[in-house]
Image (cartoon, rainbow, N blue to C red; front, side):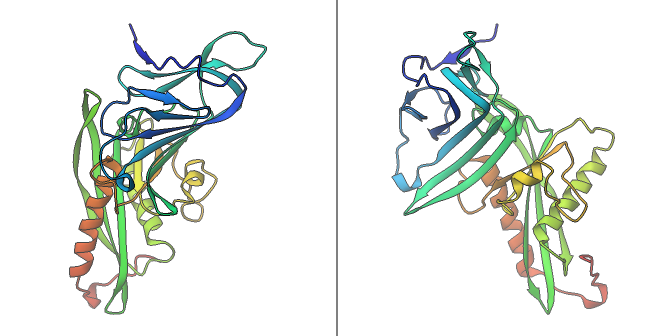
Length: 295
């Protein structure tokens, strides 16, 4: 029998219809269990110790197709997702689980007059995940990719590093991961954004490796084009001219600069960045073997 942890918010949530709610959670690398509530935001009642400017937060923005009346919020016993309970219309008295139209999960920390985004994941027509681990668990494989570019002996060199991973198991709400290097390669004189070019090559490699398994889902983690990722995932923006993101791939953003000790996407990006930077610093150009593969 499925059990769920109920936050029992019936008396504290506003009874008026809403189309969007925002849940801000402090992050302490443990299961989310205790909440306190303000009219439109949900907060962990226990704060993590440490300096405030280094405290990590995970914020879940939940959008509904129409205004709903929320009567309660539950988190499943394994912590995998949040469930919204309420009315879909004020004239409909039936209490039910309400599936959002759009969910965005963001990790960040506060800086002076600025918010630093650590990772950002969004998806349509889905229940809110308990944290980023449960998003990654749904992917057959996930790939962090980073490309560093600079001029070397008059040639624009782009070094791409890709780390692949998958979830082996989950114990007491903590993910156990398997990570290894997928490939590292150099490209020269790329036309356009070298990061996007590298992502397209990654998609091609993965699609060929898993040919005939179109139902498998894959995640790509990048620190590039944050403002375009939602449109890539919606298939309303081309990655390259004429090339849309395949339906079984999903892209999310993560930075290599921070969060590596707290969130797996950031850890993987930091690993990629380290490999790409080291390779770029030591590369030598052999002009006779140079191929202008970016055109």
